[in-house]
Image (cartoon, rainbow, N blue to C red; front, side):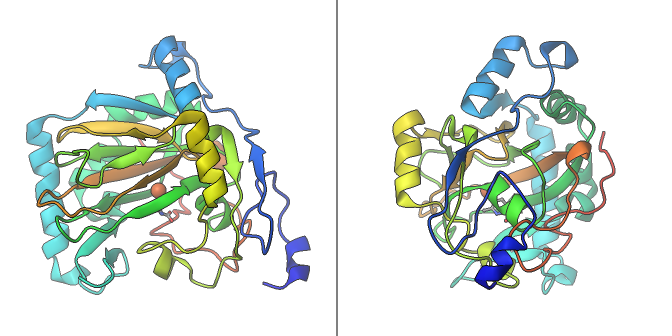
Length: 301
Ligand code: 6CS
Ligand code: FE
């Protein structure tokens, strides 16, 4: 992308993927769009989410449901029809399955989870509207071979590469295995969702072919990460199978590699407000495929 095309980009308060001096700016969007009267979370829980950028559900789904979801993962990973499907992302080196995308369309167990009122009622309360699935995936993080997911803001990618206009989306991660401190569990930087960290480097063509295995662009600077940690620290999300966490689209997060025998498998469901439907990418040469960024905005639940 030439310097002249920087001027041709759609206007946004959230500038990123620039050739030099990426800015950090305050968030201009609300975090919580609904109220305590709108749904299951209390005023205190909403306040906690607004301040920290995440909410831990505790035990969300029961052991039988986890078994059914694990069997669904097994069906996907063993399905020969998916062997060469681009929705199956494999780890660099080992070739082990790292992620499977669009699971809510690939198996009814995940479709039911995505529409489950225990999740959707809370998501609608936070986002203050009907919601649709922007992206779903299972991250398998296999034992011994599961690689890390470096620090990033999902919104930084969804805004620059998918054309998500504003911060009115969130992820729900449901654990299918034990999430220990040592097997590559999700780490968040509490409060980081209140600042948008611009990133260096213009988005290359078909960046997703690499970024879903190891992110090179949309990577915050060490200075920005150091500042966010100084302000809010790092919180690790641990919990047993069936536990779940919801985190804001702009919360800085990441996870370490997994060198233990214990796989860390999670289902991620990304909900976007129907009022925040995708437009054109704000800083990328073209759209990403719909299995990563849905362009059908049908409300769930
Ligand atoms: O690019 C994306 O949409 C994906 N990348 C990461 C590291 N997290 C969110 C999402 O799965
Ligand atoms: Fe992410």
